[in-house]
Length: 510
Image (spheres, rainbow, N blue to C red):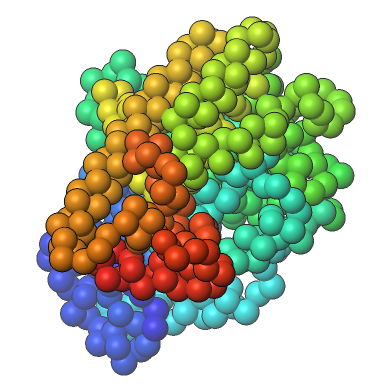
């Protein structure tokens, strides 16, 4: 079924064209109508029609501009049939040069002429569908999966995968295609528009639309993934074929020139694109990401919208922040909800960052890695971190606005203080709840002979521990099975003790 979008500023023309054919008889369907080119562009984005029949002369955006913008914006742009009047033949040549399927004169439009143009468009669509794709593309985004793709690539950029095996497992689960010869990360920066008289909602819509259009444009020419980072930055991960890898600067540069042009022409946004070092393995994308940002720091916001990292070498311990040094103790502190240990580790990271005042990018890596671990390790990590930075317009993503070592360390210190307070509050809440449960259990069993050992076994802690020293368990389903079961008559074996504990816990309603 061919989806058709009708565009004309005259309502009677729209009604006339829509009623001129019984579209279903010709394997076609009118999916929508628009009164100008700008409105039509949004419908193309949402409805994905195969064919657009549009008037050349319209307010806001004319038919030729609509066709040009759609072809420059979308990966698979619709075909166009343009409607003209006698005095508009000057535009016909340009329409043909933009590969319009046909042009129809309004005053001479008949059912046969419209049907002939429709048939011509359907033949071209059939030929397009049977043509070989110019290169492999990453799989189309699956509904609801984009946050998982984003998190996957953010882990790659920040060197948070512990092994190639762990990377491959998640890659296969998400269907990410890493069968290319080489890869390169482009770090894209949008201008800071906060000083302009735009609402926050409008700013966010502009950033989101620009990012989406960049993806639509780039994937028309080269296989790539796009990853939003914050309201001003996103990454394009270019996947280079055997032919593209040796000339990647030329190939990627041509694609980015088009992305920059489209972003400016459509949104008046001047993008800055900095491409990092080419790498052979996905596991090395952290180095490409680092060198892309390094290029932006070194080259600044000069006249060149697109620039490439010119350094040599590969990632080493002094170049990229190594979260591996802190990952295990941080994870253990998160799991144990140990506020003291977490505070101590984050203080060490802050001291390490301050000790190298010239390494701003490494400091940013440290902050971003900490942010990612907080969001992923806590079941309610998003809520906790959002509350810590709730006074910031961008929330916790304000980390990307920090430009100096003192600003970055202040952000980490703010995160540390908020996390420590949240952990202590959660732990105290757990203790209070446990004490209430113990009291309720004792009151409900006053008629039975209770001992300290019995009560301790029900609630899964050693009778030698005082309640304030208790630590909330990592897994509620394993509460109380770590200690050896005991009773006044002597020791039980581990299996019997565990069964006894579980029976007692069920009896207590836990």
